[in-house]
Image (cartoon, rainbow, N blue to C red; front, side):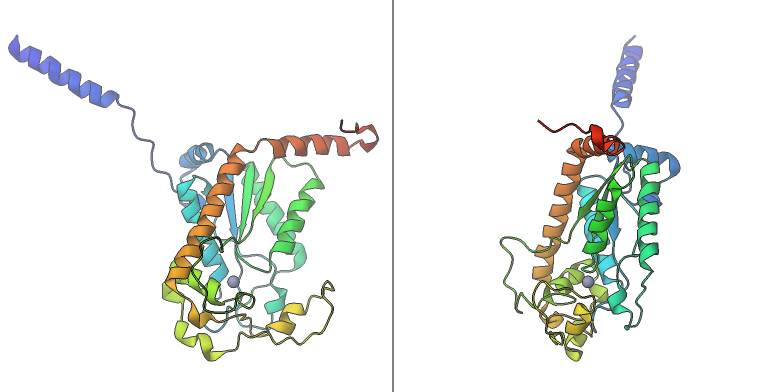
Length: 296
Ligand SMILES: [Zn+2]
């Protein structure tokens, strides 16, 4: 009896332990690393929210890699998605970069293809359950393209919402910069500092002074008058700033700031049910605008 009582207790303990809910399986945030069955679980866990980090292939001064913007935007997006779960689309670098066609390694697709590829990519993401697509931009030449792309989603009905997350590196409490803030742009102190966190092995600080990152101010036009050659007129070396004064301290701050901004946006997007509802209302009304009621 005693033996069987002990056995019963042992069995009870074992069954109680076995009855504990199994820990939720760890799911990669990388779209391409998930199995088919895990992908379904991942989309549910992400509440249909997916990230599409977009970079570029473009010269970044004499000291940073051509894929700098892709590497950095993926670094912050993947880190953000690990904090607030979202599925991250694979490497995407098919953005706007005509102004660097004179530099080695630039990949500049036609404007038609940029828009078509982006549309088909977000369509395919949505078909796979990504009903909320956050395009996380990592390249300074993309905002006009991306904002136009988001605006053009109103042309035809879509059962998903496109959001655009910009570059958000600076913020309150930032360590002092060593170079003038106004001139610190492409491959300058700030961007180079972030690269020192994302991919320090690809940063060649010792080469940063071998080219000029100064504004060459070759166009004299009034403020507010825009022309496409403006960037080339200012920074023909595809370098704007002083990368040589970059630091890990600044990089850590700016990287964290950017990751925090993405995390905040993922949370806001998960909670947002209004954008899709308004889109649906808008698409319906735009079929017969004469019947559109005046909003009270
Ligand atoms: Zn860049």
